[in-house]
Length: 69
Length: 515
Image (cartoon, each protein chain N blue to C red):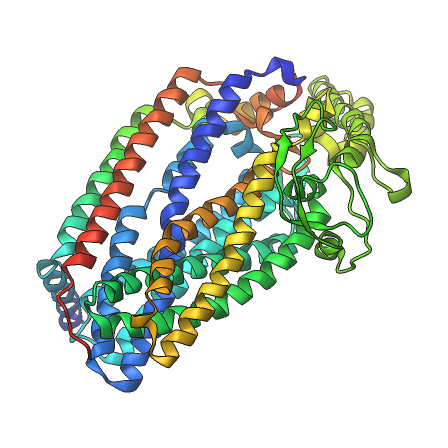
């Protein structure tokens, strides 16, 4: 089991170490994920119903009110 | 509630933001779906023949695949953010239906793609050839299965089935998972979308290879890649035409307004022809659909009727027939639907009030009225049925662009395959230029297809039940405008990065010689 875990670890370790274009791509992915989750999600995209209401009952009441007012 | 009560500017900005995100996201997805299979085919040839040239070919296209995957990955997550923030009424309304497909998509994407992706890139010379090949095929299957669940969710919005609306919670609840998964709309949408993605990817491989031949570099790689791409592309383009034809009948059945808009058909007719080439000389406006004029048209007799019902004499209702109704063909007018929709909305409100007041008999009566009229619920937000007509010129031109380019691609695949098999590709420079310049048009066809599907169904976010105007959240319009431009910048930067990195990789590929 330990041997297998070691093998898998070094498979990924060597793979990441020997990357060429992959390095650049990982940097792009990480920057993008940071922008998406740490900036966009946090500051621009709060979940409207979860932020404004505490329970599902309140949420459904609000949506029904919106749909029927 | 009438449409006048909604902030229509907020609705439009939210729609624009969603369209921008989806259109940019869709620039990356089709190439991933298609090249994953093309690479798997190339690697299969390598494993079968044992020739190193095929390993080199596979590795080269794998790098371009990785670039596209890396740039495109997670761009779809932004759409999910938008559901929660901008489209909260919609998210609540459809929540239970979307939950299952999107959860399955997430798990599949993570386990299938992520696990085997690593083997595909890091596993050369470390795992057996067979295991590596299996991983490459599993990456292809995994990415395409991810697309399945997203497209099932989208198909449900176009043709809502397998659900029950709970008037107490205002949520749709899934009652039949298999009806959602195997709805004819979902099957056709999935098959047509993935086959068109394969075609686009084949054009991409063809075009890049054509560039190598034009530059007289890496000719062995280019010629072999072109044979694989044109064979794969030709088979898939035939499949795309067949699934497109099936999709047309499905659209005719569940979204007749979209179908009429795709052809710009205002007055219904039997033996309806399909416009092969045509344009508006006077653009119709929704409020005056009769004030449209056409320039000269090339028509295919009976073809629209055939597309609708596999019968060249079938009756195809026009936009005006849908608005005003047509008793001879059992078409309920939009005026009638609006009345029924208003009854449903009023009954839902009455039901809620009666429940709060613990008045069971009134609640029961209200519920009966609601259920009898619910199928036209969304129409109740409108007074003027003309507001329920999509942007006809946009849908018409998108549809004809998509179909015209799709047929052109069949011809390109056929010619490149014939010249490729005869070994004449390097000397037929004109077809190489055509293949190279087909790349942007393949992207255009993809985007046009998205526009037919999504602009064609307007104003519906959920067909017949929820229009876009009742789906939006009551949020600050300025923040939507800011994020619209923010996304515009972010996605443009990503696109430029993708093109630059790809071009560098293509240009830097060391010449492997003739053979």
